[in-house]
Image (cartoon, rainbow, N blue to C red):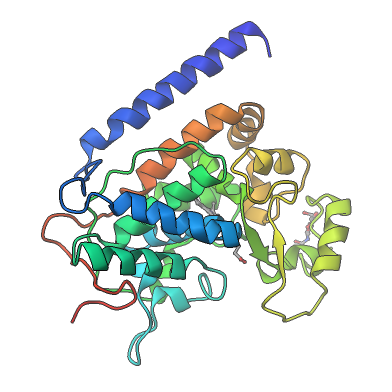
Length: 330
Ligand code: HEM
Ligand SMILES: *[C@@H]1O[C@H](CO)[C@@H](O)[C@H](O)[C@H]1NC(C)=O
């Protein structure tokens, strides 16, 4: 890297750090919200995440995605945690979440511990936000302060996931629109997509790219043929096994690094929604920049997660503090 480029990278990192430290000032949420009411809250969540991560590194990815899927549907108010009832199918049972979403038991364990020491104080929505932050740190991303004070919602509808969560078939314009609907810039969309540097995907989320792409060609020509061949071995055509999964960034599936962007540059983005980022000059430029500036991306990612964590939050007297994260209080 030339020295002027280094200087620019360095200045950008400083700018992002300043943003990270000041952003909470403008929100209704507060860093250290539980300092007086439940001093150990963040520590207990972190301890549960760490214990689960030691047993299964994949839970970190699960918890980051859980926060995303919570925040994009009705805001970060833990609607994603609510179980379906006889009369209502909840978000977690929509195809966007079931069977792929994971990490629920980590939230349940943290909540049980917190109810035991500070009954009715810590919201499920804050636990999810803390757990996502801890997961990013544990996998080698940048640690950030999570402003808290979110309260829990009382509604969860599977139908609302369809309109709010982007499917993996979207192209770059559709992704940009989907994130703009939540107040994000195109650059933030590219930054947040980098979360796909950790975790796994079920074969069903991308098998169309291998076997029935379109009327002319069965395999997506934008997918590296060597990688496609490997994916076909891991995901046989017509298999309906819901347990078949592949890592999204095979070289380091449990590290929050820029492997996602490096994969895309090698035509090894797993989803259409990943590989499509090379289709517009602006997003392609972002992919390049992130691939070359691992620390800059980590800071931008932390800042974007912080912003995502404030979407549609309930504060003050709105909502409730759920006793059991899976059921609304009666
Ligand atoms: C840009 C639009 C996005 C699309 C279309 C998308 C789609 C998907 C899909 C289809 C999967 C695989 C699910 C499965 O079959 O198991 C997945 C996994 C994942 N997504 Fe996204 N996603 C997007 C953005 C995000 C964002 C913004 C985040 C977080 C900030 C995120 C975090 C994750 C993580 C961590 C996983 C792995 C989950 C695990 O291993 O359990 N995604 N995503
Ligand atoms: C199928 O995709 C290829 C490659 O993107 C394209 O050239 C072709 O026109 C597409 N065919 C149809 C029927 O859409």
